Length: 117
Image 1 (cartoon, one colour):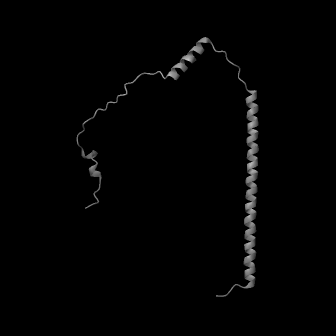
Image 2: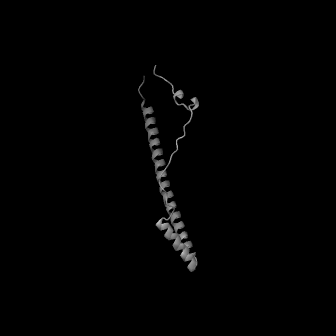
């Protein structure tokens, strides 16, 4: 086994330096790309907010005057909803047990395997 020659060691150092420079350049470009994308997304969000504010300011619906019958119907519906008026139930559950004949099709014991001997 021979030791590395001087010229081989210089080549190794040069390739390592080039690799390190390439990696740090790529990382720097990624950081700059992320910063640029962040700034662009913030600008687009602020533009959308401004457009939405402009649209909401322009669009206004005229007020509708409600009649007495409509006000009475709405107030009665709210009264019934708030007081939770509904049919009273007995809260008793009855379960009728049905006797079934024995059938090997519904027997669980035949489906189990006995591993212990």
